[in-house]
Length: 427
Image (cartoon, rainbow, N blue to C red; front, top):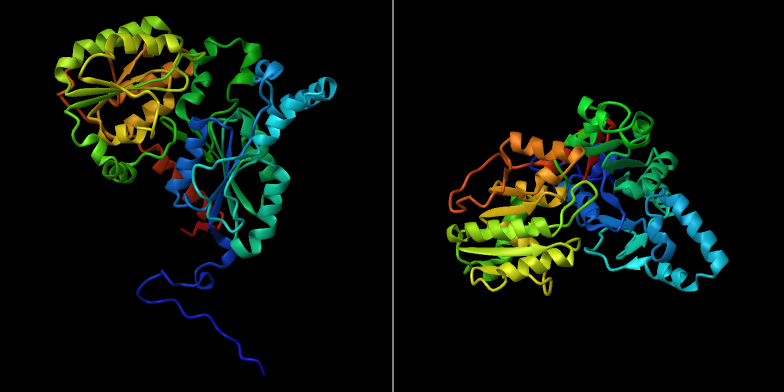
């Protein structure tokens, strides 16, 4: 008779070596995640931030939904991505867009920002393929358990919802940012409170009635919708401490207080140009006396004419350092070492990250924003999280507030939703 090897019983002093069978069964543990990105850093940062908060930062695969680029495609970005790809296919068949086809193939494998620890061993960003991800979830379920799928942005909606539809028993799908329609196609939706601004009387006054069902949420949030103040990200006190240590040599000698200025770029709902750049330059010159040093960074969206004015007015000042975008990205170091921030009002992501540090945050240009973004800035001001930047501030005078903890709060809600389904994370 063949001997049967029984598993070791659970340890009475700890759980580190406890076999899964004694806890809940192998099929109830979520050990890995798939992130569906759209190629935009701000969106993908939200998904990766949530995965990191859940303890799966080194156990996720990043897939990417990519739109066709160049030529007529630049005018088709507003279309649903599935329709956009069909039109692009027809155009290429007619015109013989061989060069565009080559570019599309080159984008299927891109450098990954971090290694993936799942058993599939995929160490690159792959083009998101619903059938491939669904097969992966089915085939690995018996051995690895359920799969967490996290997506963010309009272009990822159809992919994430299709995965949920085809593998509902094997996945838990989280959609970040409001998909507008069919919320029941996801296990959880995480979205800022200001996405529901269109349902308010003020919001509905700004939208023609025949458009309301297309560009606004149709119903108030239900139990599987998690509301946040701002955007999700990877910033918390743990990451700040780690980053502060790694950037010590770069920032330890910088005169204090250190004012960090993050400049974005105009958007459809927050328009500005050289006028705001001139206002910012003048205000920074006014507060220089109360600063030990000022460090300025531009985003990829910053217009050249805006950055030119900032460089012209402040570039020669010995207290001011303007990062030229060369070398290691200083953004995390700035978040860790800054004593205060000035951020342009266009970027919900940059403001959310700064407000997660608990340090003073001044916002410039909020009065130029419209639609739901006015509600975002109003909420932050009412809670004392941000103040408008006027140029009359004394940067040496600090003030504080309860830091935003949207990512940690959202991660807690994911834990609770998984528990309700009989699943839990195995970190």
